[in-house]
Image (tube, rainbow, N blue to C red; front, top):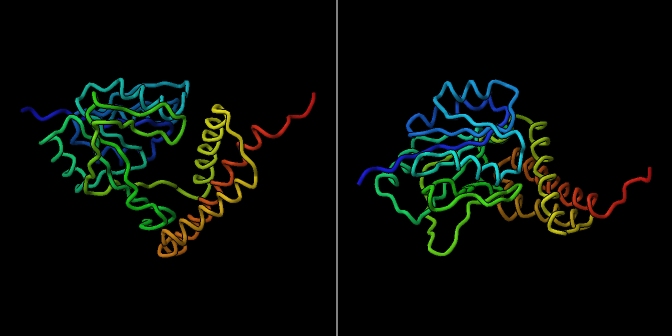
Length: 258
């Protein structure tokens, strides 16, 4: 039986600073597909220098639809999803290659992700092992169409198997990057909920924010991650409040009369 081919697939925008280091850990795959949403930096040049097939869709449809479009460009048998701020470790590569040497057609594989946040790898706060479904046969499944927090679709007959070896995640450059990224996720979350006819209140936001902090810092032992753990838990609580506040503003407040 021939070993199936593997494509590493990324959706990106203005990731020139991250992309080269990411793609350097993917030199062993058969194909690299990069779907760009309108970069204004050297993202395309960096991708093509690494041998990637580069596509552009500037009409941003949301994370799920963009991933689905990217997967439609894949020629290989299997798909490995990677973000530009992630790095495949040698141990993870070995684990993936072991799967391809003995493939299963009805299985998706979860990968443990280890995040570097504000100068430290976060091993608590509920962040590790942050298992994400990233490896599967292309013909088996794909992402749903969620605007944000998109997920690989699974169902009856599809098994999930954990892999070994960490996927390193360099998630935030600095505090400003965190705040900008978090605000984007909050807006997409609120828009998606609004489209479903959902509403919110500031009280809901406050309660969910407090609950988020207590779960991460106390229940999930975020205090063991030191000052970075405390900061991450506080920021996560703030981000949780903000997304409910955004939904409240969209659905419960009235714009001024002109």
